[in-house]
Amino acid sequence: MTTYAPLPVCFEKGEGALLYDDKGKSYLDALSGIAVCGLGHAHPQVTEAISEQAGKLIHTSNLYCIHRQQELADKLTRVSGMDRVFFSNSGAEANEAAIKLARLHGHKKGIDNPAIIVTDGSFHGRTMATLSATGNRKVQAGFEPLVQGFIRAPYNDIEAIKKIAQNSSNVVAVLIEPIQGEGGINCPDANFLPQLRELCNQHGWLMMLDEIQTGMARTGQWFAFQHYDFSPDVMTLAKALGNGVPIGACLAKGDAANIFQPGNHGSTFGGNPLACAAANAVIDTIEKDQLLQQAQSLGHYLLDGFKQQLSGVELVNDIRGQGLLIGIELKRDCTELVSQALEKGLLINVTAGNVIRMLPPLILSETQADQIIEIVSGLIKSITE
Image (tube, rainbow, N blue to C red):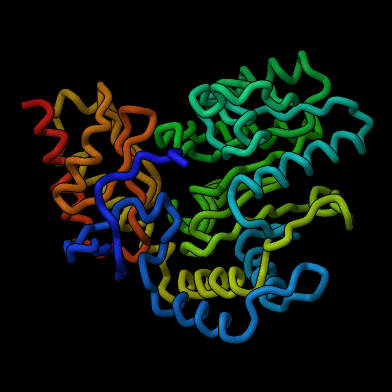
């Protein structure tokens, strides 16, 4: 079906931060498959884990014990501080699980029509419930009637959420991205998320963080909430968890970890041995190679480099991000830069129309970071000439 408008390139193989097309041309991947290939392409440890597991067992179903799944759950709860995990196949499915969990939480509290607060500019997926939760009319247009039970608030506006609390007694949860990715790399004020955590505590709401794009070391911590002194009740993951092998996860803590009971939710493929073997290798590699520190240092390096190169460029409105999640906001739409960068052998993305989004792999070298800075800065400057 014509659901995509692919760029005129077909990749045949990859190695680290590089991709090679069917003509042998190399490209520096500053997008990582949209924050998926955090360890780059054809990573030896992930490749070995997938190959070994495929030769033993790919699928049995969740009717039986899956050792790889338990191993992965143990690792995720250890690095996150959460208590339990439900495994799915994608980020949208992970968010669906969170939405169902919140509604069940509400019904158990005697609330007949539980509502979840979501924010403008958010992106949570393309299933009916997750696109209804998403704060982007372009994603929703044509798919009405949308799923009810969501109350929208401006992102990074704690006072607006306090007003909702005063006027809506049926709220049971807040679903929010700690940094909005698709919305334009929107970073909240330093006190917004801690204040939101306190508000959730006051009203008995579940604080549910969509860490699908920010998770798995992308921001320089395992998860973006770890830049603060609090934990969410629910957190969703996908993208970089399997480094390209489809897997999603919905983690919960405290009372929220005990809401689902047998029969409440399920997945045919979720958490199968193959996907879990890949995800286990991802976590092991991030720890062994100290990639949290790598993401932090390279993120600062890229941000500093862009700020130096683009200082005084009138067209640039803002340069922002955290770790290896970086956005350059221009004062006009710039979607043409995607194809221009492709011609120069660089993969980038433009989101929200005017924000250049870069999500390079955690294994990026400083030399490759310099290439990204040089090419992207040159393209931006060429617009102003």
